Image (tube, rainbow, N blue to C red):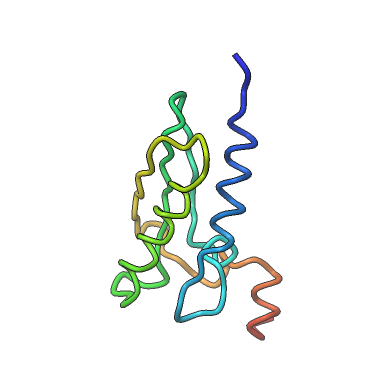
Length: 105
């Protein structure tokens, strides 16, 4: 059996980099909101992620955007979003590029 999980995971990361938090001009991946991406044998995807705050007013929008974007990838059969708040999100999860872009370095 051909192992195509790595390319699929790479596609998922690429798609997640197109999903932006509307309150912060940064994509959810580089913002550090994505904790884990799992692809099982049937190409069902589970994305474990968080939000910048538990009471984020854009939570539904962000979660739906992540789900719909990943579902649109060819060969993805289903997508589950596992929203967690442990460990809590912090600026330390952002990429250096984002920290520089936002003037936080």
